[in-house]
Image (cartoon, rainbow, N blue to C red; front, side):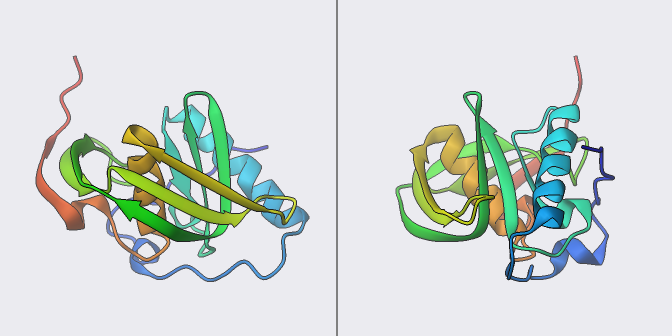
Length: 153
């Protein structure tokens, strides 16, 4: 595993729609491993492939010590509204209040090519929808009701 550079706001790749993963091979699993290591090194909750410069439809979320990898994810169902503050590894030093579904259900493939389904509320719903947006070239600042600089204490 290796740390990857995180692409930051202003890089065109963050605004492009990611391409489907056509084959889950050793390269894809290596990228997933690198993404997880990179996300953890930055104390992130999620990371999408475009954030490490790879225009593929896959992301990782880690909530409550559960790592969820989704390749070619699809939203199956969402419901409700929650307003919460969120940030992004690609937009360091900023946070904003974003409207997200309070419940979301997504399906996709895992690294073995088997279909997986993840569903949840609260932070999990926020993280899944935030990372899904990255695959469509959408950043949280596009949806933020407000934003501010993050002040470290």
